[in-house]
Structures are given as structure tokens and as C-alpha cells.
Image (cartoon, rainbow, N blue to C red):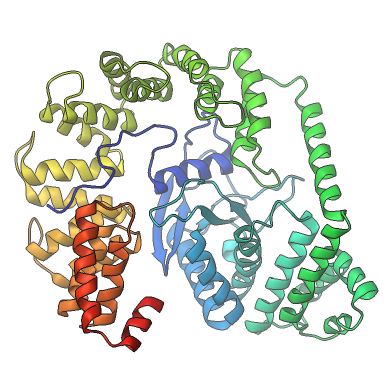
Length: 578
């Protein structure tokens, strides 16, 4: 099979080390249903697809609820999201430009939720923008997440109207998040700007401005959300005010004036005072409402504060206080959260010994998360001396409860022979256990074992099936390995076109070996048009990839420089600009 991952031998820290899709799903479901476990939820992903670099997810319906109208099936929900995105990208040039910017800056995710989207006032939202469930960089070093959830009503809207809603939530609020503006402007100003992006989409999509809905939209835009902005224009920039006095306002010019308005508000101290007052009022209301709360109610409030929710910005410090109150009142699920926050220094000063105390308390009651994290800490020797016997003990307890991250970590101990002789048969069995639960890294590892016949009977066809599962989940190493398997016809029918497609997927995530292999394909014209400039570009990316092994980077540098020696100055300039 192809290459081992750069970080293939790292252990999985159960609360922070899972892959993007798993962590996104867990966080998202937590946000939507505020599940009682705090780390998992009874619903899951029913369908997922990629649409031009945007990940589309459809959640399964909540079986405990009934609705007065028929829910849109997952397949149709994703189709509607894709069609709305496509319409927005093709019809609205400004929206298309901003969407490209968001995809360059981070992960863009649209979610269909077959449920109501309640907001903080008890009302319902058609769609909601939810920033940064994931705060770790992806393979390309992008840290931000641009995530929009569309509820059961919004998914039924006409495609053009749904597209305009995406202009508001994804483009408008997404651009604010990309600029770091969401926490630095008043909510009313954030909404004003987002409504302006929706207005230009309404124009570009050709929506009828004479309908009752469009008239109500325009009144809400001018008389409510942008009332302060208009007052500023009236007082400070009267020459811009007439831009409003038309059926189709000049939104780009208004957005330019809006930047001056925000700066004016900041200079006058209006923004900072308003935000501070809002935060104080919110905290005081929450403190009062939770004065006599039960441990479970405290826990649920802490989960919302930790991860954010509609109308609630993440606040780790306040979340810790509520987790701690619940924990001190005997709430086992809060013990794990308090432990994690002490371990990582999230919302409280880092204190690994204190974290260990809470983990041990929860692990003693059979909590798989605490048991797994204890096993990981004993393995790496963080806060305690390395103790492989203790690591095996705790990870075995959690793995026996069929917990995939624990099985993966325990398999890695066996594979590396830490604390005892290497046992590939035990590792393969545990990787299979975790792989069958959808643990991506374990799927790749199991494929690796089957391909080589290590610890199991050699079966390259089954190996290809597991590697394909991992690759389809976005695992860059598996995508590269699967590309290699298709070039060799190893476990699959040889197909250089499919190989090139998998190499590209891996390379676009920043995996250096795939970048170099894609460079070779362009250089030789194999399954791709022969293109020296593209070949140079991909070899250059691999050569400068700081996460790659030095051997890979050196070989890529050699090829890059060989190609450069044959290129004209114009071609070289184009290659560096692509």
C-alpha cells in the first residue's frame, strides 16, 4: 500500500484528537439537541456530500419528536442546499467572490436539520450561522469554520429564497467571522450588514420586490436592523443617504459606507460600551436563572456556553464555573468536563494533577471518556510518569465498552510494543473493532494491516475497502494510499484516472506525497493533460510543506528545480502566481 501518515504513530486524545468529521458531528449534535451526555447525541448523520468544496450534511430526524408537517427527506434536503448554493454562485457575483474567500479561509459546512431552530427568545429561525465548533487547524492550516444550519421550514423554501437566506447567514455572517468581526460589533450592526448581503442577492436573483414578503424584508432592513446606520448617514454622510431611495439600493456603495459607520461607532465608544453592557446583562440574567438549578440543568447550561448555541456565544470561563458547580454536586458527566478543562487549560488555569483527580473519579464509575483519557495521559506521561501498565488497564476497560477511540489507542500500544512485546494480531483486532464503528484512522490502519498481512491474513481487496471508507471520510493519508493502489492495481482494478482524482483530493488537503505525485502526473501527462506549469506548482507545494518528511521535501525540491530550469521567465512567473 502507499505511505504512512506523518502523524500515524500519535495516540488519539479522546476529547481533542478525533478527525474533523467526527468532531464536527459531535459538536453540532450537541448544539442542536443539547444531549445529556455532553459528548454524544442520540441522532447522527444520515447523508453527506461535497459540493464544490462545501460540505453538506443532513442530520437524522429526532425520533422522540412529532411534527405537524411532513419532513423533507435527507436526499432532497441536500439537493435543495446544493441547488441554492449553485444558484447563488452563478447569479450573484459578489456572493460568489465572498464564498471563494470563505473556502480559502476555512471549512464551509451547510447542515440540514429536520427539526425546529429555536432562538434565544423562543422564536424560530429559518437558518442560523454557527461559527467555530472546531478550533484546531485542518491539514491546510485553516482554523475557522463557517457553518450554517437550515431548519425544517427553511429547507422547503423556493430555491431562490433559500439562496438569498444563505447570502445572509453564510456570506454575510461568514465574512464577519472571517474578519473577526462577530465579537467586535453590536448584534444589530452584524445583522444590518448581513441583511445588506441578502439584499444584493435578492437583486441578483431577480426576486420580485413588490411581493408582501419583499416589502416586509425592506422595512425590516431599513427601519430596524439598519436604522442606526441610516441615522449615521443622515448626520455624517447625507450624500450617501439617497442610495436607499430606490427599489434596488446600491449595496456595494452602502457596504463601503458601512465600514465608515462601524469605525465611527468604535471611535465614539458606542460599540464597546454596547457589547460590554450586553455581556453583563446576559451573564447576570443567566446567573439569576441558574441560582437554584439542578446539577443537570447546570451541566446543560455549561455545554451551551462551552460550544455556543443560537444566541449564546462560547464562553469557556463561564462554562467551567457551571461545570464545576454541577461536578461539586455529584454530577458524573461534569467530572469529565472539569477534568478536560483543567487538563487543557480551557476556561481555567491548566492543572493536570487536578484533572487527573477528576478523571479518576469518573473512570471509577466506568465513564469511557475518562478511562480513555487516563490511558492516554499514562501513555504519553503528561502530568504523571509514563505507566504503560496503567495505560493498558484503563484503555482495556474503555475498549471493552466498545468505545472506538479507546480501542484505537489500545491497538497503537500493541502495535508499537509499548510496555510489552509487540502484538500485531491484537492491534489488528482492535483496529477492526474501532473501524467498524466508523473511526477513520482505524479504518486506514486496518487496511494497512490487511494489505501487508500483518497480524491478519493478507487480503488486499478487503484492505482497499477499508482504505476507501477512510478516504471517503476525507482522510488525506488514505486518499493518497488509495491513489497509489489504483496506480498499481493493488486490491482494486488499475485505473489511473481514479488514482489521479484521489491524489488530488489528498494534495488539496496539503499531504506532501500526494502533492508530489500529482506533480509527476502533470509532468508526464498521465491521466491529466501534460502541464509543466501545474507540475512545477505541485512540486513546489510539496517542497515547502513543513509537515512533510525531509526526504519527501528534498525529492520535490529536486524536481521543482529541474522543471524551473526548462521554463521561461513568463511561465515561471505564472507558476508561482497560480
